Length: 157
View 1 (cartoon, one colour):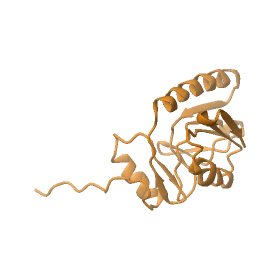
View 2 (tube, helix red, strand yellow):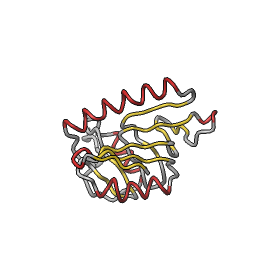
View 3 (spheres, helix red, strand yellow):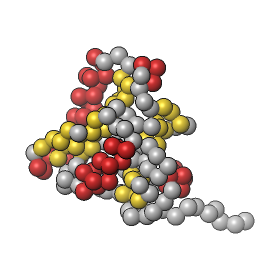
């Protein structure tokens, strides 16, 4: 009996297609956060502060969606945005497509673009302010927010 063959693990800096990224991602249930941006894999650690800020974003989003019919929120969900990109924003807000929203479901994942994407960028990351910002602009994310706790600032695009 032959040993099972598993795909190689995702590694920071790998260059992959979105299909290959998703195939490897689904084989790694222990990996919680990874982005594919323009064909490049980014794996960043999530600090205690980052996790605490995600909880606060969730509280904020809960209040917002409760007061906004047709609006949904998600935390660290994978978005199938383009043929070579599958980011995981820390928070996304979307309008139901039946109410004019621009996203859809493909299998188990959101596809297209949310109306709002939020990233917690503890280091003022060049990824969040560079490659991810350009992806969100091309994908027509209507609003993009980066929380930068070390710099004590919020940047809203």
